[in-house]
Image 1 (spheres, rainbow, N blue to C red):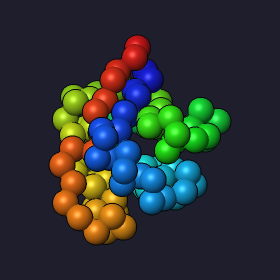
Image 2: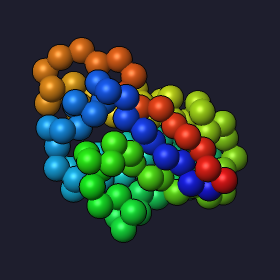
Image 3: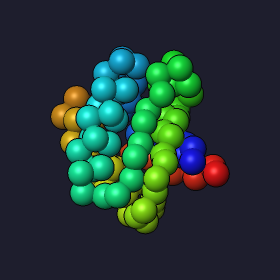
Length: 102
């Protein structure tokens, strides 16, 4: 399953403060942490996430999904806000919306 994580306008402003490699690392780290709580396998493939800031999207591949995908990504959104807020230095609402593509 492919999930497109599309940044909101405020989310786009926040991710502009990061390099592509930093964003890939942040997503990989928080996804790995959440997979300990949820029954899902996820990966952030580097080859399709070459320019996250310009694309405004992170592509996540999921398999063996045995949980509610929406709940998983809502929790990820809350977690991802932490490093984005620190670098941006302001308040953030929702930073992204998910689009599940089967």
